[in-house]
Every structure is written in C-alpha cells, then in structure tokens.
Amino acid sequence: MTESAYHIPALLNETIDGLSIKSDGIYADVTFGGGGHSRAILSTLGENGRLLGLDRDSDAMANSPEDERFTFVRSDYRYLTNFARYHGIEKFDGILADLGVSFHHFDEGSRGFSFRSDAPLDMRMNRSGGKTAAEIVNTYSEEELIRLMRTFTDLRHPGGVAKAIIAARAKSPIETTFQLAETVGKSIDPRHEKKDLAQIFQALRIETNNEIDSLKAFLLSTLTLLGPGGRLAVLTYHSIEDRLVKNFMRSGNLEGKEEKDFFGRSSSPWKLITRSPITASEEEVETNPRARSAKLRIAELIKPSSR
Image (cartoon, rainbow, N blue to C red):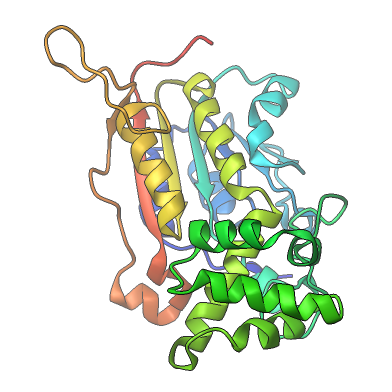
C-alpha cells in the first residue's frame, strides 16, 4: 500500500522543521501510520541517526521502510517508555505524535470507522483485543452515553441521541455502522446530519480506543524521555486533544496550572516554539481537505525530569 493511499501527513514540512532534527539524533514517531513523517525524518537523519516508530494497528507494519536506522514497534504510544528502555534508548532528541486518524481507517470500510460504508461496528485500532464500538453502544447506560456525547461532541441534544440508542437496542442489538447511523439520525438536525454523524462516530472511536487516556500518559512520559533541548511536536484534530497539549506545553502538567518561582518566573519545563498552533494553508487544504482541522504545537524541553 502506498503512503498516499494510507495517509497524507498534514503540515509535514512544518513538523519536520519544528523538530530541528540533528544528523546523529534519536527520534520517535509514535503514530507511524503510513510512514510519511518517518520517511521525512529519515531523509534528514545521518547514517548514525536512529528512529523508533510506534503504531498499535498491525496494518501499519506493512508501511515500514527498509532502513537500518528504523525500528518498528507495534504498540500504543502510551508505552513508549517501556519500548525505549527495551531498545536501549535513554533519551530522545525529538518525539512526534500525529493524532489524526489515517485515511486508511476511514477508507477501509470493514474497520467500522465511517458511516459511509456498512460494516461491523468495530473501530478498534488494535483488533487483537479490547471492547468494540458495538459493545459500547449496546452496553453503556443512558447516563454513560450522554456523558460520552457531552465530552466528545458539541451536539445540542446529546440526551436525544442516547435515548434513540437505548430504544433501538431494546428491540435488537446495534451491530453495524448503517444501523447506528439510522438509529441516531432520527435524533439529530437533518441540516447538520453529516457533521453530527461524524462527531458521534468520532466520540465512539475515542472511547473505544481510550485515546484521551493514552494521550495523557504519553505526554507525561515525554518529560523523562526527552533530553535537554529535545523537542516535542504534536498534531491534534479536535479541541479536547488540543487543549490537553496546549496546557501541557505551557505548564508541564495536564491541568495547565503554571507555577512560578519566588521571582515570578514560570517554572514550566518547556520553552514554547509555537505560542499559537500552526495550521494548514489554503493550498494544503485544497489538496488534503483533512488537514483543515490540524493544529501543530511544538515545544522544547529545558528542564528534563529524572522521575
């Protein structure tokens, strides 16, 4: 499978420039996907450089470049610390995370990520274990479904969506993408049907894959994994992710509580390389519409943690 068929990286040049890659440095691409970012990093690295690529989806392994400097690890990026230790890496010079879902996941209808194809309601990035989206839809209580919709969407009436699901599954389980789309379609504004359906499917994907918990664990791990002057580059695609990354890069904690020393100076371990997120140009959006919602934030670690 070609990289373009699997995924077109958003803000590729800006991301690589922001990492300020050293020829002999050690880097991690923790959302390998189609390998676009990894290939760009490898093209900048010298012969003594090193790159670790992580992805929990087994399909991504087929995109691995044949390069002695590259190591692929099939894993959730929340476990980066474990695999860095396993591969003898003490500190990274840069870490990249592109939190966007690959074209591959949407375009391969059988994975159940999109309401445009009828398929089992799966949505697992790692298909070897864990609960499916169908299990969530058919077992969560009404209160849990409302919490899910309120947290991960901006639907005006999340309660209506939850009630529609509860009523439908009382007659028969909701097992496919088309069944879910038909069920919730009755409770959303037809003028915003595609947008609302996209948000509902996104919310289920986030819940199915524990994406927010993984992101939190990953961000905290970078405080010990990066060396002095090491850079963290993160591409986000919705407000919950972006808020977490922004808070973390400004303060060094997930809550965004910026502490100051006796002289009123920030004690954040980070120096912001991007005070505002970098977004895609109109030209890029024309060729890659999915880049429209991408936000790139970059920070440099100035106070590594020894924990």
